[in-house]
Length: 517
Image (cartoon, rainbow, N blue to C red; front, side):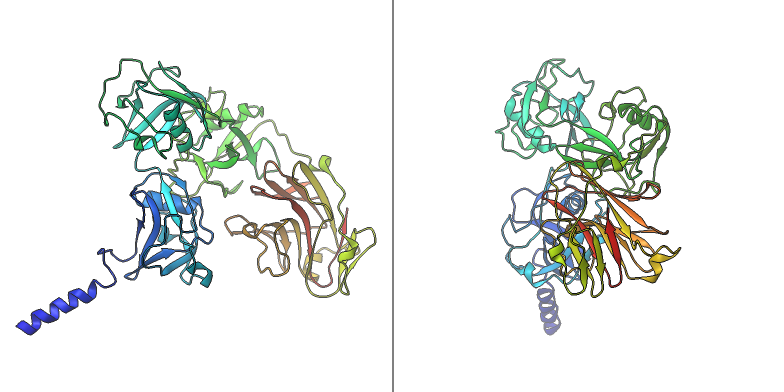
């Protein structure tokens, strides 16, 4: 009997070796921070716990972790072990690629074989707002209005007693609205019928969430009637655009806030919402509201707005009731779109610019004319950049494909080509996939179809025959569009955020010949 007891004790001790905190298998937790909603992300897979490499770690991945842990929305997704390295530093996974709507970070795509470079201070971390939520209502933009908070599932208001600039600065930073411009009291943005949830708020100014500030206590109401706190942030120049249709009056709805583009979830999205967007863009009345957007495709930016419920009479989409800024209630990634009656098809050719490459880029197999416009490749695949890059403005270039070959199926008889733009730092020497993650926004002709790789590494295919390709770039808006230059038919629009100079890019396989218009 004694031997059996000893055996059980040894077995229990052995089982605790790899689980010092009794962590279950396949779970996620945060470490190395006093805040329970911030820290290094640790994952346990098959009973072994370790870190996550920060390679390709971004705000979408952080959003999944924050929601999974009941910690609200993401504030940041830092890498580089900013919270310090855990005592045990075995990296378990890397290359995490979440859409943002997954129920667990372990349901996102990832690599279970982290590269060697992940061994040196490359831990992924998150900073979340916490389980409570905050929003600004009844103001002129998403970054101005009456302050309302949600606690224990109930929305309420904030009393303006002790309300000052430091409090406003915390809220503006929490909502990613820039610096606090001014604070308001005496219900400048209207009196809320909601209960008072916070009173006598006294922030130091460096807190990352309003509920981290000193206050009397949740639901402690000493507030005189009609004393609602409000504020205006320096951000808030919110704009709306419609993309991926080639028509300024139809497309996927995207909104820009603090120089960051985002999409609108199609939850509760209907024709009333579409009416407001069409009127806001001077595009007439709405024909329809697009949901589960197969027509204009889902975007790659974060979902900034969801549960939008316009009456149809509002002047701006930002005046409509909605969930709090950045709160994503989409059960799956599905962006809202609209079609308006007054079509305003963009004519990219009005931004036509000359295109050429440096003749000195020629070698024994890549032949380039003296004016840098006629390119013919006789050997291995080669890529060359245009002679001039851009850092602002709108630009349109055309490339004539195999000008001497005009057969119905010309794309099938020769090797591939790639046309588009590349960032200044992107390497064209060793590339397997020319994707936005690597600084390339291109259209590729393969053996049986044309394709683009979007910002989430998904491939989109197109069937047809192209003799002339139009490439349109709007640097400030972050758009790269491709057209059939003969018919002016829109093919696809990349959405991006450019941070450096970009150049036209031409890649040719053996036997391909192009002329730059």
